Length: 477
Image (spheres, rainbow, N blue to C red):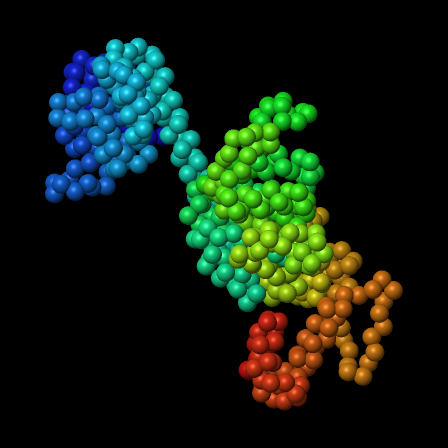
């Protein structure tokens, strides 16, 4: 591991030597300068043409005297930080005062040390500064990883339906407008909310989620706005609410349709005034957050029934984004299966090779009431129980094996089984069968197939595209 580089800038020769010896014994790579000009040269802050070049070797820490023969230590610190953005700076001075300490820290100094100082104490400050630098780098790496994870191209799907959603996310991400994400349970509403946040100007600030349906109503107000000690029985200390935790970032209100009418009033006030008070407090806090809300409830109908405030609905529904169910984007099923197979192979040490054509056909025609969450759980189950090889129909739970295209002719009747059936899935499967038969009869000639089905050609082409129907390799379009 490369030694950390430390720059010492002080015009006292004896102090530079003493600091060099202490830090060198600790394993640091130490360089010294006696003036602003020399420090800038050694740190790569000045090029031959007066421009600031990129530093060949980054500096980790600088110990800078406040008063130097040719300049000010705080101004030097700012130039060092411009060339070495992650550098930590400790200001040294023989003229200590509260005003100077405040000025130094306001401009980014890690610490302000008054001469003369104890070397052991200074070494402790040096180690704390470098630890702080490491934490900052780790935090930056974690945020970068999160940003990569929620880039648009990491949301799995190529169907027209999901592309429309991603197009909307891309357009609204850089605004501060409130977004209402709707869709069935398991469709990935929180994933879309995170994509909005991590592709927005607020991405360096927190993304704070809260499930409004999972927390009892009497506790939810405290979770949202926080409370002060003694606000109610059991409030033994102050508590920071989600609005404050999300300051500068995004607050994701999941299952917003479960919010009580009482809390709906309070949330509406926060959205209107951009401020709130913790429970039991008269102190007002600014609500610098972007709101992304989500629900699987039809809020417009809830408004009609008096279960949701109309004014809050319109405050939330500034930019609506509807997530399609999995059965509305069946063409993405093979991609999602492949993605989760790779994920669980890697995370659980398995070696599934994929799904057979018959198994894929069954999963394609399954109605997926639990959407992507159900598909993910199925692949995890198969990865654990089967472990390796190709997934065959026999490996699937029984209710998945019962799903195939319904082989009917127009004159046949369909007997509904005792345990019921999915109407939309049966109709969709029958439509697929008719289109495939017409295409096969005409050698995949779309004009002739459309004439057989008495459909407009563009209508047939759109259905073929939406369903992801493909001709065999030898067939021509």
